[in-house]
Image (cartoon, rainbow, N blue to C red):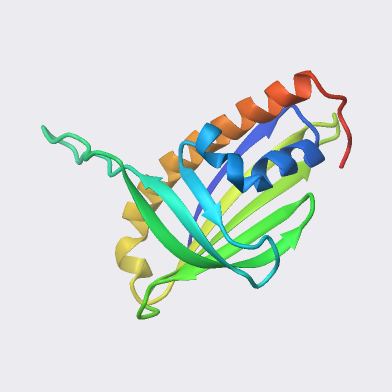
Length: 163
């Protein structure tokens, strides 16, 4: 199994960050990476994830390819409000599986650390994980920055709760 990990500290409480993270209907207005999630917000439900994918340029004179939106069907595996959300998907033939986990860790100062982890497994994982790690790592960082900005903007006008 291979992993891509990112994190960001957010000056907001866990409940507020959770509410931004799980308000899928507002993703198009702030999330540069995940453009939408459709489906019931309950464990075991099937969801459709629309992700904006940019393929970075390889070293040399090439340019990055234009961003496209990739549609993935997954399953909500775990929901623990306001701490953790996990979904998983796999290729049609089951040769590649991906699990995405979002975690919110409370810090002593009342703020949080947001973690985003993607686990890549299956027969194809050793062959594609470096490419996915590069693409997804950059995308996760963009999403982390956007989540931080949105939550901190909301926190500046709202009382902070520990959550």
